[in-house]
Length: 128
Image 1 (cartoon, one colour):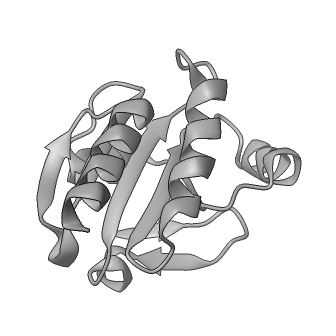
Image 2 (cartoon, one colour):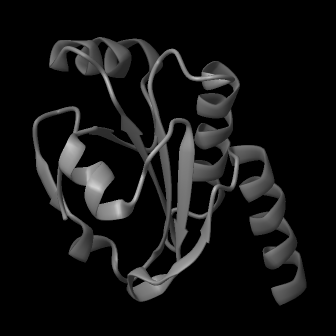
């Protein structure tokens, strides 16, 4: 799957195969969008070597993505959502999430950011 970042660069999912990836799919009108993006920032700051956070935003105009990028200044990857990404990843409703293990194996669908944060922190504590 090929995705376009907010700054215009292309990224393939193949590049993310050595890390765990948390995808969050939403649009600006999604329920709890503001709190979820704050939690995405916290999740992205947890472990930058082992975990990547990708926010896929579905917007009507592509320049809205650049405006969001300028205002929010996210520390996670911000991707422009498209119909092909939704079809390939099986996303039918927004907001939605997808948690992938290493080598792009699906671990869990539908984890809200606060649930994912609790899950990831408990996993880190148990591994210590």
